[in-house]
Length: 236
Length: 290
Image 1 (cartoon, each protein chain N blue to C red):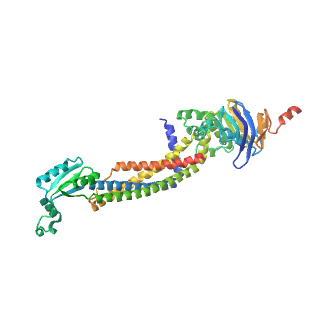
Image 2 (cartoon, chains in turn cyan, purple):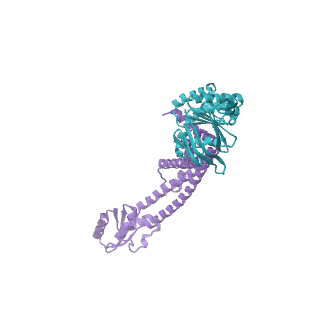
């Protein structure tokens, strides 16, 4: 579903964000990207929806060569890739319903499709009863669920989450992670960049660790701290 | 027709407008001033053109005959003039008639008793179908046997038309500059709206809206500003036509104030819309490319 081959990224200001990264992510996988701030997690996600282009290497998403994709084709790529951020990026003057519908409206969707898909997305994130409320009237977790509903309303094959629980308390964090799991179980490929050790350690999914722009380790059923799983297995 | 889509689009346009109402009013005002000047210019140009054409169409060639030409020969000459396909009419004015006409025009100031002989030659007044052909026809007639002179006043009229044409060009340049100013103000207004809505634009791009779709409401905003300015300008011009024109007509009785007003109004609306469209297109385009 996702493949990065020999990808390097240097920003115009000279900062090297990624260095010779190779990564394959299968369909319907759930992957954590971990590492300190500034190790290239967000940059890697941005490459996948062509917010930025690599300096070198190839980026493939759902059989599309993203790094060479024409500018005019980017919108169609993004309809297949939902993105969720730490700061939710909701429109404060629109209701929950309108925020979610917005993603369909601006892609020119027919009204009858909007009327069908928005309730489904809101139901999935458990916010049907708050559809008429504004983001300012919701908790952080609910705002993030709204953002997830917006990311999913197009039925994308991939969901990218950049520190989705960074602004949330532990209870809301759990709620969001459970939601992401449910979404993944329905067949959506989910990539989550995070520094939340508790989340990573509890979920025991594939963990890709970045350090200074390189992939330091890539473990199935990994822990936040590198090799911890293996040492536990050895000691157990 | 998907009314939900239309409603959403119009909602976006309205949101754009309400973000920068003050700036929008400035833009509309500038467009209005520009279009008022353009409208007055178009009206004047059409009036001057019809005034000039009117005079040109009335130009006659005064063909003076030699006194030695007999009445019969004069009639024959008249037939020759009239047989030219470019000539509309050729009217004979014998010398007595010429004198009488001069007397009619000058009245008492012209004392016939002082004349010992009629100084007027026999003449023809020749009218030409196309005013542009007057010099050609006059030249040909002047060379004919028995003709002493073929005179016309076209020179003066041509000069007048040339002057008005030059003035028109200067006016056009000035209006061009004004249109440019209006476009820049609209473009800046739209840039402010784009800036105010950058968060929404970022989200639109994130969820896969095409640049064309994102541009739509802003283009509409520019066109609405342009059309509103033009509409207002047409109102001002209509008021001026109603209040000022009767006074002008009274003062300048010989000027045929006339123009195809619906056509001019249509042209002005088109200019307003086009200025708004182009300004908005460039303004948003620059943002989306960046």
